[in-house]
Image 1 (cartoon, one colour):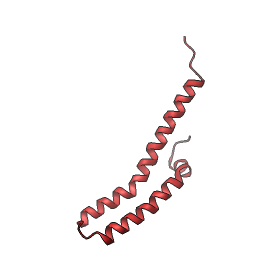
Image 2 (cartoon, rainbow, N blue to C red; image 1 turned 60 degrees about the horizontal axis):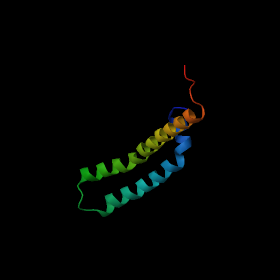
Image 3 (cartoon, rainbow, N blue to C red; image 1 turned 45 degrees about the horizontal axis):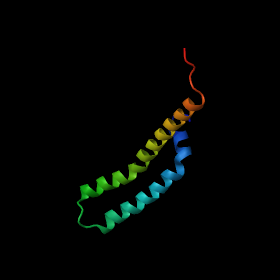
Length: 81
């Protein structure tokens, strides 16, 4: 896989879109329905929900790359010197 933001977004757009829609719903519920939270807490919850899909997708991408490297080493072992 190529590095960069565009290939990353092209590969993981359904995952990210799902989380963005979920984030909007959760933010709406937190901000409008929960009166016990302070304004600062609501902002932190909102930021956490918005950035979590990107963090999760990046972790998934790194794990996929690790598995692919492991598979390549298995089927194309390096010759011993």
